[in-house]
Length: 332
Image 1 (tube, helix red, strand yellow):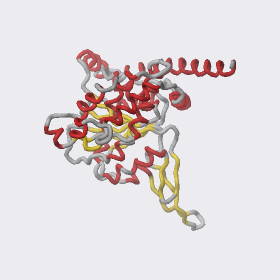
Image 2: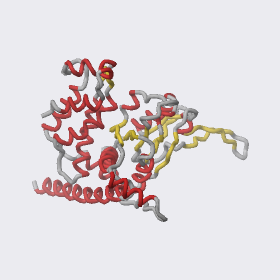
Image 3: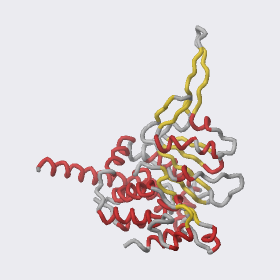
Image 4: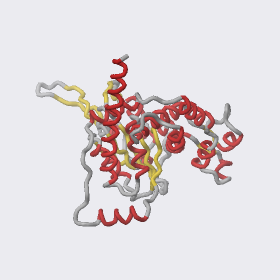
C-alpha cells in the first residue's frame, strides 16, 4: 500500500513541477505574441496532447511567429515550408538520388526533406495541390514516411503547425477531410484587443525586439506528454465527450436540427482529440483532473474542422461554430 502511495505522490510531484514549467513557457511565448492568450493556450494544449494544429487567421496575426516561438520555447528543432501550387511531395518528404562511388559503383541515397524535424511549420498549407498536401498524411498520423518502399522514421516528438488564410481563396485547394481529421485542433485567430495591439506596436517598432528563450528541453516536453496520458478522467467528463461527438453526427442519436444542417460529422478521432485535449488543458492549468467545462471550451477547436454544413444551413445563415454552440447547450 505504501508503494502505491509513494508512486501516486511521485506523479503528483511531477504534475506540479511540470505545471510550473508550462506556466513559464506560456509567459515566455506571451512576451513575444501579444493579445493571443487563448490561441497560445490551445497551441500548447495541442502539442502537450501529442497532436497537430491548424492555425486559421487573416494575414499579420503572427501565425508564423507563433510557430517559430513555440519551437524555441519548447526546445524543438523546427523547419518551415512555404506551400505553393508548384510544391511537390519530394520537396516535403525528401527523395532518393543516385550516387556513384570512387570505384564506379552506383547506389541510391535518401536525402531527407524538411519534414525531418520536431516542429514543422506548414505555411499556407491550402496553397499546395491535394497531391502535395497528402504527402503529409502518413507523417502526421504514423510519424514515419515511406520513400521508394523504404520506411524512414521521423524525429520524436513530431508536430505540424499549419497555417491557412480564410480570406484569400484564389489559387487555393481545400484540405482533404482525411487530412483535416489529423489535426487535433483548428485554432481560429482573431485580431488582438486595443491594449494588446498598443503594446505590440511599441514592442515591435523600436530599436530592439524581444526574442523568446528556451524554457523546456525536448526530453522535458516528451515527459510532459506522457504525464498528460496519466491524468485521470472522470465518468462525467467521458460521458460529455461521447455525447457531444455522437450528437454531432447526422443519423443515430442526432436531433432534427443536426440532421437538417450537417452533411457529415466528427469521427472517433474527435473523441480522442477531446480526451487528450482536456487532460492537457488540466495539466497546463495545474489541475489534477479535467472537468466538463474543459470539454465545452475545447469543443469548437476540436470539432469545427470535422463537420460540414449543408447547403440549407448556409442559406439560413448558420455557421459551424453556431451549430457546435447548439450542441454544447445540450451537455449538462
